[in-house]
Length: 185
Image 1 (tube, one colour):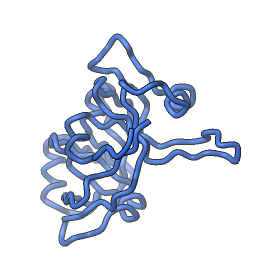
Image 2 (spheres, one colour):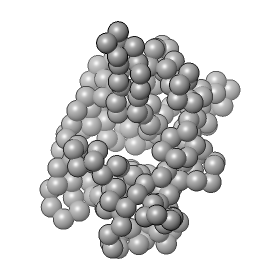
Image 3 (spheres, rainbow, N blue to C red):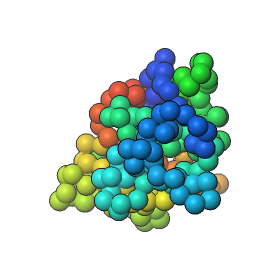
C-alpha cells in the first residue's frame, strides 16, 4: 500500500445535481448524466464506461458532480463532498487534503486488496490489461486498466484490527497523476 494525498492548491469546479446549471444541462445533453426516477441520476464516469454494463454510477439530487482531467463527470455524495471540500467562490472548490491509502498492480498483494476480492467483488484480471480491475461500485460495474490506481476513501477495522468495511474506487493513471501526490511507499 502507498500513501497518497490530493495535490494542495488544486482548484476545480463542482455542480450540484438537481439544481439548474448550464454545465449539468450540457452533461445531460451529452448523455454523460442520465436523469432517472426518484431524483436519481446515472453518471457515466470513464470507469463505468470501461465496465461496459451500460449503466453509470448512481447519484442523487443534492450530490455534487466534478469533472475529471479526461473530461468525464464523477459524482461525490453530498455529505462526503461538504465534509472534504471548501468553497472558493461560485462553482469553484478546493479539496481539503488528507492522506489516503492506495494500491497499484505493482505493489505486493495485501490484506486490504484480499478483503476487496473476498467481500466487495473486486476482480483482478491478470490476462486483461485494459480491464485489469473490475468491481461493482456505486450502483454499476466499473473497470479500469492495469496502470490505474485503486484508492481507498475509507477502511474500517474492528477491535482486532480486522477489516470490516472499505470504500474505494479506481482512478485512471492520467487523472491520478494530475490530482494526487504519492507521499510514501
